[in-house]
Amino acid sequence: MAGSYSRRTFLGQAGLACAGPWIVPAHVLGRAGHVPPSEQIVLGAIGLGFAWDTGLASPDTRLVAVCDVQRDRREHAVRVVDQHYGNHDCRGYNDFREVLTRDDIDAVYIATPDHWHALITLAAARAGKDIYCQKPLTHTVAEGKAVVEAVRRHGVVLQHGTQHRSEWAFNAARELIRGGYLGELKTIHLGLPAGAQLPPQPIEPVPEGFDYDLWLGPAPWAPYTTRRCLGVHSWYFISDYCVGYIAGWGVHHLDSAQHGLGADDTGPLRIRSQAIFPEDGLYDTPIHYRVDFDYADGVTIICTDVMDGGWSQGAGIHPDRIRQVHGDAFGRHTFGVRFEGTEGSLFVWRGGRLDTKPESLRQIVAHDAPRAESPNTTLDHFQNWVDCIRTRRDPAASVEIGHRATTLCNLGTISMVLGRELDWDPVREVFPRDDEANRLLAGPMRSPWHL
Image (cartoon, rainbow, N blue to C red; front, side, top):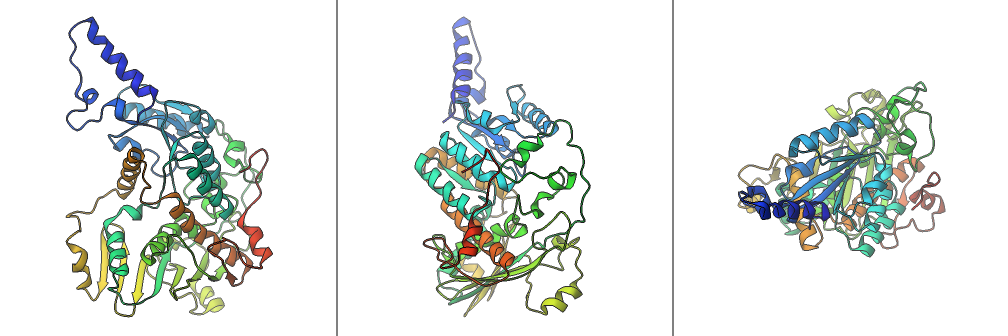
């Protein structure tokens, strides 16, 4: 699967054998657990966000290019990669389009801010590159539909970064639910992080070595300020780049809910919401929220922030105000995913946590439980992608699965923004007879960027 880079290197080394005796290193022959370079998948990382370096931990991949619009970050990544491999083969790029022109690169790992996911994924698919795209898949529903079409048209393998799909506990939960062990499924409760608010920020000079215009890309132009795009989760709370934690974290839980419900190929019929938004300042995505998704089979997914949990600290709104405005209607739940049926319930979370009522339900799937749950589910999910690149099968979180889960994030956001209940047609992927809501399924892109 490797590109010409690995094959040229391998053949060049082999050619030295003609000059005299040569001891071939084990990693070249693929011995001692090594994968020979000619069989490795050559990888580029575009955007040095979450887990960009996962490919370094897999013997099946070789990372040869890193791309980021922040020079210091990019140069640091090059050093990390070169140190890992003990060479100077990694190249750094400012513009993702240069990475995609390299014929030797087979696949790309995309970890940019959300507003870039669609355009880079589309370009990668057109270039014939297999894709691991961090969550959420896209920033709008229209982008998601375009990505699904492009991935299928060009025959590339896309893994969405909802790694719960590759963890035992979540798959065991689905087995119990779909096997009818909870009786008739009624509700799915999701606890998510709260948002945040930030006072207006001063306009600042763009730091040297930061291509701010390319960072903005398709988003509207805005004056530079540090908290807009640099620092921990800064852009998460600005709607031009992300719809907030309902996507930044919620897409994991919403995907797990769809998985357990058996609704990977559909969606809700109705969306109801309540939300509190910042009154001013840089951040404009919901701080506290509840969204209910009603499905055709009578199941409701109830998605709320965990106001009193660690994730919500710093949100800046006192709990008394929430109760004053909304009473107990938000009905918050523990951070994680809880399925409730007529005959039982279960709570599932990372690290192999699977709590059931009655407790005996867990024993039904316990025989498949690993002795020690993997400490790196992201790597397991990455390896699933790699395996599927070789077989050309759909990975655990295919492009359609990623699109459906991401769509839930956007539907909830649209309902919160409009402040009203919405009907949804999951087949046509439109709001029936609701032009105002349908206009929010897509967003404008700053020239020259477009789908």
